Amino acid sequence: MIKRKGSAVWSGGLKDGKGTVSTQSGVLNQSQYGFNTRFEDGAGTNPEELLAAAHAGCFTMALSAQLGEAGMTAQKLETTATVSLDKLDGGFAIPAVHLELVATIPGADEQAFQEAARKAKEGCPVSKLFNAEITLDAKLQS
Image (cartoon, rainbow, N blue to C red; front, top):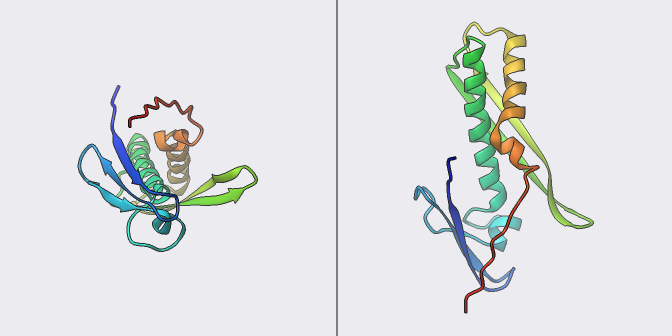
């Protein structure tokens, strides 16, 4: 089993607080996030755009694998994932993710390409994550 880690640190209240997120690889190292980066247009990142980038990357790699199984090799695959964060009756939720793909595959069969894209969308581990069981180990320190 492969395990990867990400971490977050937060100080202050929801609207006036600030935080950082980091990844095990160091690609993100104390990258700023806060209320203004999540709900406004402040400088920094937010959980939804990180999910969108992860989903776009996962889907695109899964598609490359599906294309290979179908005997196709992409010259270029460009995917944009749009994560929708909506306020619903029970609070905020992510009801939808839209994947937009532009593929350059010389000589590709349209039907085989569409089937590979469908399989990649359904089989990508991040696609499956949106219905995952979530567990928590919470520790309080003073």
